[in-house]
Amino acid sequence: MKLSTAFVAMANAVMASDLPDVLPELNSFMDIAWPKWEVDDDCNRLETKPCSADSCEWNPCYVTAMYDGLHPDYGGHPTENDVKYYFYAAAPFDGQPYGGTAQHCELDAPDDVKKVDCPKIETLTDDGPNGPGHIPPHIALYSFKWAVEAKLYALGDMFEYDDWECKVNPNILLKMIRHYFPRTEGEKVAYPAPYTEAGGSYPYEFPAGRGLGNQTPPYEPGSAHWCTDDFLATGLPTAFCPYIFEGPDKGQYRHPHIAFAALQNYLANLAMPDKCSEIWLENNPDFLSSDRITTKKAFPKMSNDDADNKTFLNWIGQPDLPWSYDPGSAKNAEVMLATVTRGYLTFDGSVGLVASGAVAAAPLGAALIGCVIFLAD
Image (cartoon, rainbow, N blue to C red; front, top):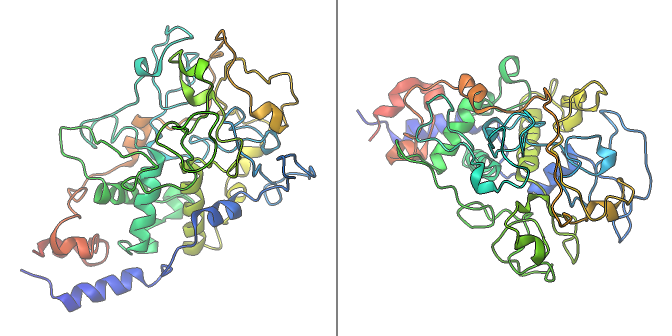
């Protein structure tokens, strides 16, 4: 049996009728979700205002993850765990190095352990005990963005408040990801870097491939962290070095999970304006609770630790050498475990099947017209 072109077009039109024809630029979502405070040309904050879920302001000159997960006044942003990015596959805070990150170290790993010895969870299948494992946030961001622009799903199918509140249904998100980044069963998925065209050409990465003294375009492939040559020579993780902090783009790095969460907020507000705000804190007021166990990740001793920790000078510090790092004690902070995300997922055989033939032109019409769409050829 073959579906008629007219029928497929009609199904697509019904599914897409509640979606915008053109999505705004990513930074506009982020500025709405996380309103920014005013700064001078040197990134000094001009005024400290009261902070509540409907009035808080965030740092527009973001240069370090050192204070991520803490109150916005410290200059950080929410972590991957704070925005509940489903496919982070985080390590718990058990007192080991790099707790709360996607790097999984042994509990007795030394404090100078290298990232290569603390692997991310990379699976050979999506439906095993760890689900799809770690999927870089930029992959989810662009899969989500491209799928919305292509109108592959109805807005009402993406969001179900009773189950997922103001977050996209993880089953739909994974299908979007596999539409653009399919898995060959039994193999790991090689995800392209965010600064590549295949990875979305993410415009807020500013990779440091040209070295610390060249914080101007054109940027060359490398880490988004700008480290000294002496630190790079140690082989220790670059994640503790600042993001771009000089030149025309200083302070403009934005984590892909922040862009993803902002896009998610925007679409959830379109789907459920009476329940979901475009402002992230209004949907997540507990982030400001003094009782919350923060998802802040441990940092080593930094060169500018003596400066006020609410200033740009403090934020642009480099890791001290010799290396001094204390991963801290275990804490019961909520992190996005791979096993927990796996429990959210159901598999009906359609994951990875939407990218071929006529089905690709109207992927996931099954949400509307049942399994008959998979009979198209």
